Amino acid sequence: AAGVIQSPRHLIKEKRETATLKCYPIPRHDTVYWYQQGPGQDPQFLISFYEKMQSDKGSIPDRFSAQQFSDYHSELNMSSLELGDSALYFCASSLVGGSANYGYTFGSGTRLTVV
Amino acid sequence: AQTVTQSQPEMSVQEAETVTLSCTYDTSESDYYLFWYKQPPSRQMILVIRQEAYKQQNATENRFSVNFQKAAKSFSLKISDSQLGDAAMYFCAYRGDSNYQLIWGAGTKLIIKP
Image (cartoon, rainbow over all chains, first blue to last red; front, top):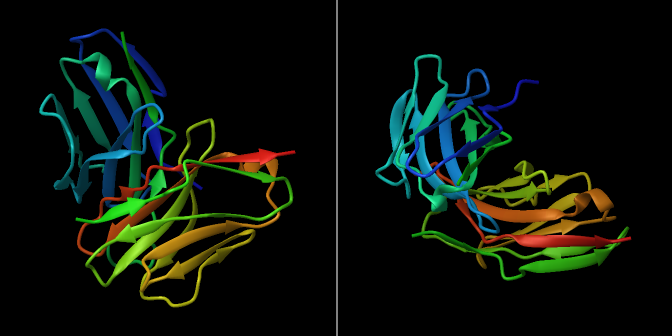
């Protein structure tokens, strides 16, 4: 079965650089969520999109932006990277409403290292 | 605001034995969903089991079962016949009916002793 695809798996950037993370949800899933997980921490919600519109916003820095495209894939753009942005970034997708499945499927994550 | 609390930072169990991981939550919502996720060293986030709050029957998935006590706002995970592959971080998560983001507990590291 198709899963949530995230790319790249690993990314190394220097401070003040820009990074773009991509997420391809499960086909027919209409909602995408982005989470940031620092070392030894629980995931922190960043932002979500439902039907290509931003549906909820969490602790996402102003330096970050995200969008969901017409094919439902999503991109998280991170600018002016800081050492503290080093983390595992998860994307999850779900089908909201009209389905008994309220579970989320997570991608394998993108490990971002800022040096 | 909703909160999820996992009071056990680390638990260990002998292989083939049973272990219970605790989770409590706080909410004023009547409809919500609760999840247990497993995160092995690979850091993949894997759904273990989920429970809808309106269902009185405890969810079960093979060796994994929950004890859902809605009045007490408790949602513990029982792992029977523990296996070495069960070693991982286990996160309890909450999702309300009006807000689709997951609220996470701090996690419990489960160690399986051979």
